[in-house]
Image (cartoon, rainbow, N blue to C red; front, side, top):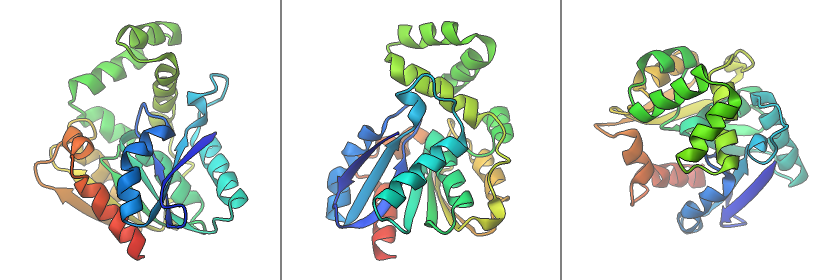
Length: 236
């Protein structure tokens, strides 16, 4: 599992799980903002993006993150996840509350059952159909025909195997405080899905952005929500 670090090396550590399909190096776009606000931004690449033989799972991902934190002397930090990376951040926080001070979910997917029944984005529905109705080789060929590189195609497929599977490995009762930043008009990660997830958490605050869509939160040139999160983490 590869880790990329950006921002201020001596800043407040924040682990950021990127969305689907993205590798950790995508966090470079937030490096200047992290430096400005005193954040040491750590962005892991989920291991199956680089290793096609890796069996995708929440547990495997979390275990490698904990190993990295221990080897780098990081006793505690905040964690965040965007879009498809959100559930991976939450799994880490739920199962390792001694390591995670707080968890931030940005335009995150919520419970898979509600997600599947409420998502309306044509692109996401197309992916769900592709992964649900075709074998692996057919799905890879289709994704690559759309211009997605082979590693990201496999990573997306593997992510969805985990995201649409069983989430019962998360110990929600032990989860530290969770802050949910979400757009009310998110078609890719429906607000109903994240609200269903929030209902399972003992300490949660939902921060809705009126009228914001999934794309609007991700492409905001001012990094409005990221700036809010970074400032809060830096002041913790």
